[in-house]
Picture 1 (cartoon, rainbow, N blue to C red):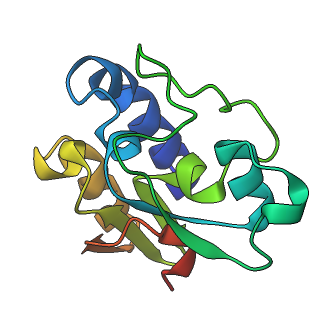
Picture 2 (cartoon, one colour):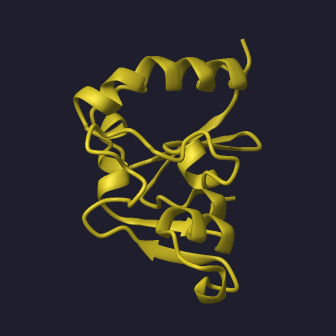
Picture 3 (cartoon, helix red, strand yellow):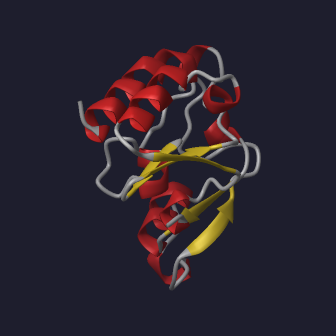
Length: 136
């Protein structure tokens, strides 16, 4: 097995947990790094008022793209933020970085997958940062 297979299986295995148990906590609390186009998509602002460079946005009560049933309204959009696509698993070279803010990580739901990554000689890092794009 390779890291991509392990990552995909981890994401599939945790899909129900994200909706039923944690109710998309990652989309309801905290900050997210966004490009100007991602910011425009999420916050539905006009182009002349969007930021010119990458920014960190405070989500407040929840992401504006999150529906009341905890599903992302822009998930299939090509501009869906990279951080959102990858969260809570960020693979950078031979490092698997898991967000320490994710309830699945906190509740040790990744244990079987961590074992696989370790057997593939990956370093496992639990980060307190949600901004995986900035992790190296």
